[in-house]
Amino acid sequence: MADNRLTGGREGSLEAPTRHPIEWQSPEYYDAGALERELDRVFDICHGCRRCFSLCNSFPTLFDLVDATASGEAHDVDKRDYGKVVEHCYLCDMCYMTKCPYVPPHPWNVDFPHLMLRAKALKHRTGTTRARDRLLSATDVVGRIAGIPVVSQIVNAANRSGAGRVLLEKAMGIDRSAPVPSYHSRTFRSRFRPGADADAVQATTDTRGKVAIFVTCYGNRNEPELVTDLAAVLRHNGIAVTVAPDEKCCGMPKLELGDLDGVARLKETNIPALGAMVDAGYDIVAPIPSCVLMYKQELPLLFPNDAEVRKVQSAIFDPFEYLWLRHKAGLLRTDFTAQLGRISYHVACHLRVQNMGLKTRDVLALVPGTQVEPIERCSGHDGTYAVKKEYRAASVRIGRPVMQKVESAGADHYASDCPMAGHQIESGLSAPRAPEHPLSLLRRAYGV
Image 1: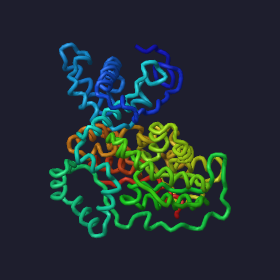
Image 2: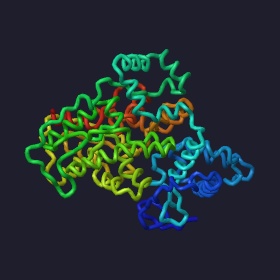
Image 3: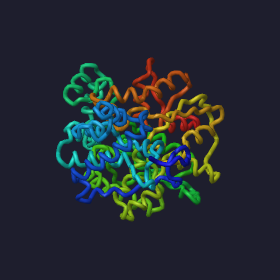
Image 4: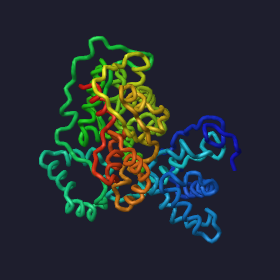
């Protein structure tokens, strides 16, 4: 087993954890025998450690399978049950970033999320992925259809009715109690009007003072007011704002499905468009943590030799990461007109793994009369995991501690950087109460 040296609470190597490129274009990546041998190896290590038992449902599922064998050893688990472990992984990366002592550069070289990705990729390539799951990952297609005028009204009305949700559950396996987003026929991109660039764009060592917003499919069609709030906050701070002329889904839903060819197709649209904005002097800011993570981590690992991917990686920011950099340079306005009181703030997992610290908390704490109370636990939403009937109960169990903390805090507001996580929390509260996004709260504090 690993030695007992400690670094930041992590046993094992004193070096910072590192990630290896994903060799998804290699034939061996899809070799079923090689994959099974690596699953054998890693599952045996996980069984001997069990440090991640309190994270997602993959680990309890694995440990229950081991404990049910006569020997109590991982090598006696039926290989046909390995898929039960894989299907509960939603690639949040929290085991890799916060728990596992054996990640590289440790010689055992355990990267549990990327091993699960490999298993998902093999499943997708062999054509055994459910049609429901393929449809849920096609966010651009679903958004275009559901966002058609009149159609959007029908879809939203059906999603709000008990009978409609029962039919959706029977037809698609989408749990009737799970939060599902509304669709807007008037998208953010159709509403957006480029304003005049700031009179005197002020660049810093870390930021250029000009932002191209990567709107995201969710921000464009499901909560366009979120992106409107982002644009308003940036402009209030003298930052020129535009959008890239062409944009598709970032690819995270395809990644979670294991559809790596689909990820590559989306990249072929997004990277040239975003790279051109970087060349034109813009920073990139996206309001959804998963989308920022896709460009900061996943695409660079999938395409390690692509210079354009690296260019976008170096220029993309979370909104509050960007605002904090402006604050450090003395350029963030603090002319707040409203206090916010107490905020119960859920830190989204895909934000935590970016290792930037709690910048949302730090920026909101600049508002006088504001107290931010972070909750650093998983909400259980995790992409499409929480809406699927077969995983809904598990997702609620995972998110229950967050829901309980929000409820017991009795704060003036509760918020999450991930709007979908916010609605997952909302679904578990005993009294109906809508979440408020941190960007919306900041805009309110500015009074703009």
